[in-house]
Image (cartoon, rainbow, N blue to C red):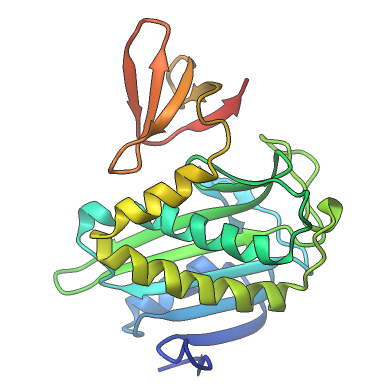
Length: 252
């Protein structure tokens, strides 16, 4: 097995640290498909072709955090999407450790973390399956010291929000919180616990949002909640509740 075992209590996880790679998600998936065991973290100082959601690129300048976790057979297929919320909860916990008391750190459905209302990170899940193995890769990017200027949603860096933490130190906290979240999640049986914690720090909850799904008209309504599968529940002006599986969400 590749990677160095992490210290207790994370000895079941391994870490491969790199100076540069195309994409930590791509590399994780390549290793998984080649037979590498799960619980492998890959962290790179920079990426030459980072991945964002829905085929977008992720700007990957040195000084930010680029990490991916390979999991093997983490749960039944219908619970794989839970891992977005498992990861979001863990990442927010890690950030709160280093944030000043006046920082507002929220979770934006489905896969972003906001600091003071601006995006500072993203989460990307990718999976592949064969008859014997389900491989899940969880990619996490955090703007520690810099952020791109031309983005779909307003972006920021941790430093700009008075959160000064080196990426290695942030990863140490994140890896510990991920292990705790995965344990609480219990392969999907404990998703109710994760869902409750996610909702407690959800951005835009109970407020007007616009939902944009490619190829469809925008939908406007009130972000009411997420259901037991993590779908957004959107209350529209037609007194209907729309169940949204994936979309770009804009506040206001």
